[in-house]
Length: 296
Length: 316
Image (tube, each protein chain N blue to C red):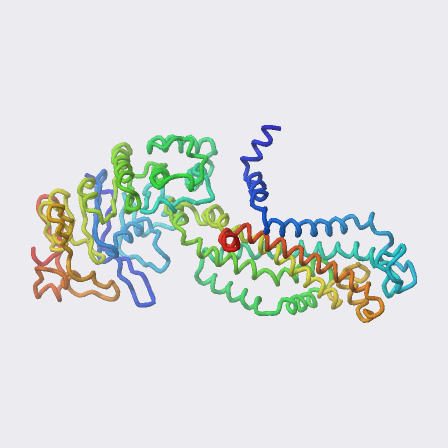
């Protein structure tokens, strides 16, 4: 036990976790913890949907448009499906897509930003131009266009959303790299004969990595909305897969009568977005000491 | 004595938005083995640029012509990968500002491991650490500092670490770019003492770049005085300090503060702009002994006498 603790304290991951707990007190800490709790609850509900959902989400289980109450916690929708069951099942797809999409844009945007910022020159010019033109598009419109071209499916939708967020990583990382590049320790590393890729990996990347978790969670929050919008428009998923955005599109025209069938899916989209934003904002406060000082 | 480093007709030009900046112009310099050469001159005269040009770590807008011979190699003709291998292995450099020269997110020992692996990729961690410890002992840093982060160390300590990193591969040439400027006087003298003993132990040639004349007088075997990208006078230290020949050297030596009278002489005027072409002697507008010929004709390189030095002036 003692040696395990000891090692935990000395390893990088151990120190990071310990540091996180130390720094996550006060207001930013509270914001993060609220966010993480909500996200975790939604993730758990979705993962455990097969056990928690009282009904099959895709079959008619009662008279359509039954009000909430009795066995139907959140009522039934226009086709008589249980809204609560559909909400539990419906979180799985958005969560998968968001995780995939943000990972994909991280995997593409981060290395491109590093290279562009560090190498500069013509490559940098071209990449910045390409990224800026992607950025200039309204994100949703771009995602719709890509989704329409590459077709349905979780992977395709994730890719469509990923493209929208690549420029965010690229920009932040690239700009930070081009300032870290002129730090004297980078110069000293070059003077000691360090190869370029090693300078990038060991001297530049760790000094810009603090941006990643923040962009990651804020992009994830935004991706929830984009995903919901895509499925609301009927783009993206094969029929028969429960999804919050899709459920809203099925029922919104009858909102005045069966408000519950749109309200609850909307509430969950809102909750997930807000929670992820909380995590991002809180992380930003903690990881950016200047901001932290300015707010206290 | 064999010549270790020799530049012939070296030019360094930076392309800028205001035109070409001629930072080093037609520079001939030779450094024999085991000799410490002090390179002095005021800010912006090109002395740091020369040091970085030798290592080929100038900014991307710099172009170089001429030749830099190091041993049997022409550094300007070598492929990129080979110049990288020479850096830190054959020629090492230490800098003015030790406070910010170490990666703040890396422990001291990782700096050593990284540097060793940059040149010998398959070195094990243990072997690297063993070597690091040996060098650290040479610069008198206790081994327990190895697991610390740079912010936990003082400026003097960090400069010792930088020196140790430079010494890892027993370089034959050490370029020291104002190694003590950012340190207070007590630490400065400790670092100088250290450098002196290391130079002897490691049998290195040193190119000491500084504007501190006292440092040069105490340290260097030979001195080169730079002005506007050129070496205007070069020679053995004693001769140069006792009998400076170039009017700029004379002015420079006169500008050392006299503690008896507290008078401080300064050379009138400013150094010339390095943009664009140059005609005649660059020191002409400030020179006390100027002649008409200086304005239009480039000064000739003349021998200074028994010390094997040179002076770039129409007077001789």
